[in-house]
Image 1 (tube, one colour):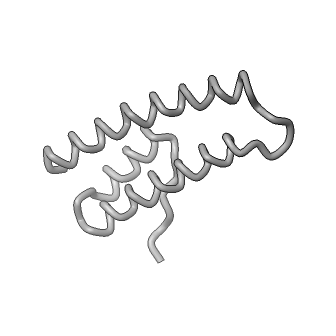
Image 2: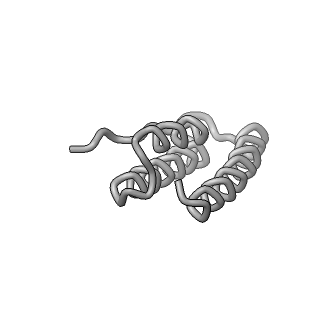
Image 3: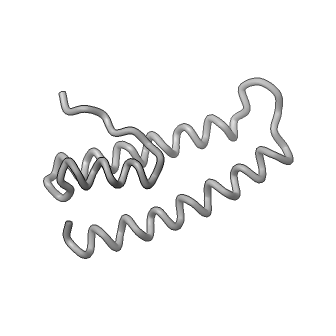
Length: 82
């Protein structure tokens, strides 16, 4: 993995983890019963990160192994190539 891609992913992971902690605190304090929009927002954010990792893999900037490793670090799933 190129160093600039690695730095980008490390920075993104740091921001993502901070965002997740903040959202979980909001959910804990202000959650609405049922289909809470904050929970939907977390799900949408994970989908965006999953798509980004998949795009980096498809562009050849991440190997299959690196993509799986990053998906595990971000706690997301990457789609199998079609």
